[in-house]
Amino acid sequence: MEQAEFLEEAIEKYGKATYNFAYRLTGNDADARDLTQDAFIRVYRAWRSFRPGTSFISWIYRIVTNLHRDELRRRKGRYLEEIPEDNSPQAFGGSRPLAVTPIDDYINQGLDANITLALEKLSPEQKRVIVLADMEEYSYQEIADIMGCSIGTVRSRLHRARALLRNLLLPIREQS
Amino acid sequence: MTPHCSPEQLVDYVNGELAAAADAEVYLHMADCSFCHDAYSSELSLRESLHNFGKATERELPASLADAIRQAATPQRRVSMLNWQSFWRPRIALPALGGVASLALGVLLLSPHSSGVSTSIAQISAAAFLDRHTEAMVTMPLAEHLSAPTFESAATLQETPDEE
Image (cartoon, rainbow over all chains, first blue to last red; front, top):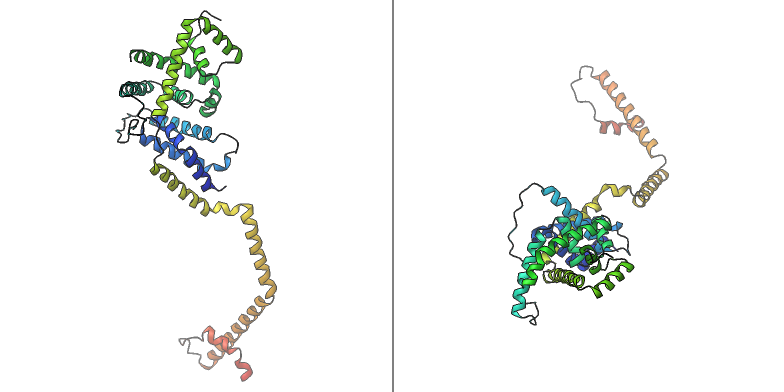
């Protein structure tokens, strides 16, 4: 397989997942695009180092994780202004099934907004582990491989993150 | 087991990350402990909320981003094609070197005396030039300012001694 062909297949199969992962880590479209593009360029350059039979998604997620960590370090100390988005999540933009009632929509919208806010309270490391463990349902071992740390570290980060989310979200959920 | 499951144990249980024996222990404990069962239900509900949130906020890969990746990758490809370091790769360098060597050898074999012939012509031409110059000096000693015979005309003079 040629390099260009490899890139094309990688974009087609894993582009969406990679972009979504980047979006969840960064929280905005512009940074998610940059992160995704940089990750794919690295994959393109190092395509020969990919061994068939290993997990491509773990590889590219690891690249995204490292790039995101580097970017946060680079920006450390700078004032971060949230980028206004004209492309904010169109969760209810017509593609949603009509079986959901307006009341459910209202509750879910509120819950989604609260989850978004609660996720912002987590450290970047905790956020990564929540995204991978709970949203994408990776095993601790896979998360450890992606994040380049031990399973014990994954476990403790996840426990702390879940405790924080539990305290923030469960009371709201019970109220609704 | 302690009276109740710890939150950490329940997180690992919900995520299916407990060892088989510990998993069975929690499972059996929850059958008799409503407190832990409720805590487990809350933990499971939180996980489901996070998972559903992930699904609900999932985005399509923007087509412009895919194009941008392709475009950003293309110059990389051009650079690597033009990279001179690639010339030193054995599979490129060895055939190229062999080609150059065989070409040089072919030239040498096809014209073995070419360099000797050109040298002798140059020597004859130079000798004729000097003879002509000496002759001119004898006949016109004060004509130093006149233009000396050109190399081309001197080259033609190599035939003249026979004619005289």
